[in-house]
Length: 391
Ligand SMILES: Cc1cc2nc3c(=O)[nH]c(=O)nc-3n(C[C@H](O)[C@H](O)[C@H](O)COP(=O)(O)OP(=O)(O)OC[C@H]3O[C@@H](n4cnc5c(N)ncnc54)[C@H](O)[C@@H]3O)c2cc1C
Image 1 (spheres, protein in one colour):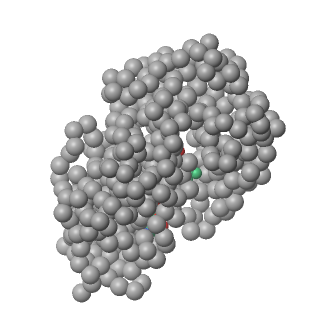
Image 2 (cartoon, helix red, strand yellow):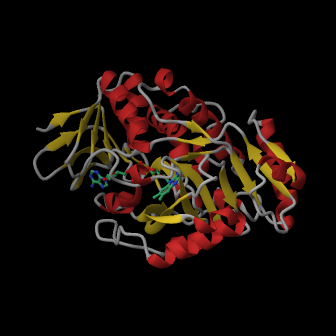
Image 3 (tube, protein in one colour):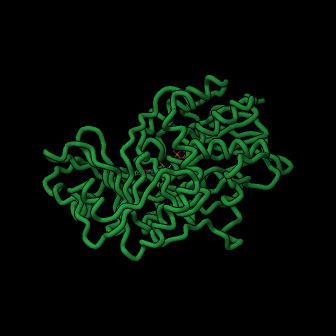
């Protein structure tokens, strides 16, 4: 007989930890089992940009709810999440102008503070930006970024305050099912019993599902980020920018750094073993990211490279997560596959996953859109516009 809980959560990234808090708040006895240490998956390496600019309603709602949590983290969770309000500027090509305007109209309907700004206004606010053919942009002043490890510390502390247990260095090596119901998990050292088990394994999510004989369309894909040290007089922080023309995003980082990543649909093809991949940044990546950055921000031509790193996205066929029961009626659930944009959704996802276990739905959080059968039904989650790789 192992230790007994109401719910076992596999994985201590933002999804596992926010779900643990939400379920503990509802009076359930929860254990989070983490094979390594808290935050060693995608969450700890996240750029942690928090914007609400999405091209479909459900994710925009989720981001809007979550931003409120990040902004009021000490009350809504506990401690600090390091939220820095930097503003978020979206630059698209002229052909995406109509989509951008319709998207912004959708966001405003949902109560998101955002605006379309024209060429003159962009140059007035950020004179160092090279606009080229870009005539329109969208700007979200409330957007920012957080410290992902501080955020996780807050969630873990708050969940523990509600009675949850977090076991680190505890690899789930087996999932036990009997008569179509889950009854616990095994680790190399001990067993844990529970009638509910949730796979929050991020890039390891498909491998964890296989322990129960379930195949999930989640690939673990290698992605990279680079840092550049801004020269004087550009030491002041700049906004977060998503530039869909040059397929690049950047945000300020402490120490006069700019963090740069690519918006690259090809990333779904860079499939790797999540336990054995090159975690160093490639020299070619730094050169490519730097060139794209300088096209928009020519003054950074003289910035110094400050290295970078590689990490993992958990990518599904439509770049949206799977939040569902893995085997109907079994009590075995999955909440994984956030395809490179999950950090900002973490607070809402914890709520939705807890709702799923309890069998309720918070208004507006349409969990069924993320069901695992949507691909075979031909109903993937899609944004409305071409630049919708931002989800
Ligand atoms: C470079 C980079 C930049 C990003 N930038 C942004 C951004 O700007 N904004 C944004 O919203 N999102 C961003 N993301 C995406 C976001 O970070 C992820 O979607 C999110 O962190 C996923 O969280 P998770 O909890 O699902 O997975 P993870 O954080 O990967 O957590 C899964 C955990 O499960 C554990 N685990 C795995 N297998 C087992 C097992 N068998 N037993 C026990 N434990 C196990 C792992 O060790 C891991 O800690 C970025 C991601 C990366 C990599």
